[in-house]
Length: 339
Image (cartoon, rainbow, N blue to C red; front, side, top):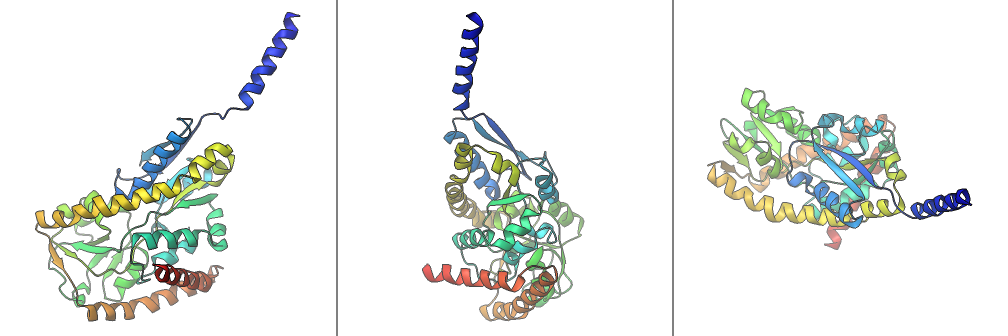
């Protein structure tokens, strides 16, 4: 009788546990330090923990899990479950989303950047491209148009970029080549040392990164409106890990993305950008603003050739490159018409 009761108790206990969701921990690979660029991930971790009463946690690491150029590789082998990366760091690994890094696409706001990215991420060719790395894109890291901060003689005209060594990735680098600049692609964590050593004389970043990576401590000038483009830096999950979550935890994760992005954009606009002007003033960094006709000529010289080169290169890879490019422009036009 004692044995029967014992078995019955064990069975009841098993049924009880079957209705519960087991605790889950994900490791998240970022780099640098907490800053505007990572606020959506920080907010996502907070929301997921709150919604699951701490049963699902995102353990965020700033550089402790992987080199920033190898985050996609780490995702592919399951070394960690979530990561952020920038497409321009390794265009061959994620060619489909580099369409968003083409110069002079015409994105005007962080909201447009967010919506455009999210739309492109759902394109079948993009999903197939990232599936090679066992990766599912969760959300973007919307960034404003990049501009240059540099040392030495300020480039008062665009001709002054001729021969200038600049840090510029992806489409921004392609655009700067039309001015005769010499672009070098390097990750954010490498840039300050390159500026200090003279490897580059100017750095293209969004404002948060100029502050976070110490460029403003060295810079003597800043281009206010060159706006050649931006970079696309998604947050991805290991697909197997995502599919392995319980329904409750997956809903907590996916259902928190919109709020996390809302927080990110609010933080960038109302905190980061609020600091930017005063930072330039405090450090005596000269602002350089180019005439509209000069910028129009720059766009005409850079945009179409870069787009055509991108389409040809990625069509050769087997991507529906023209389709992706057209989709990007059409989606952006729709977003602008709604706004």
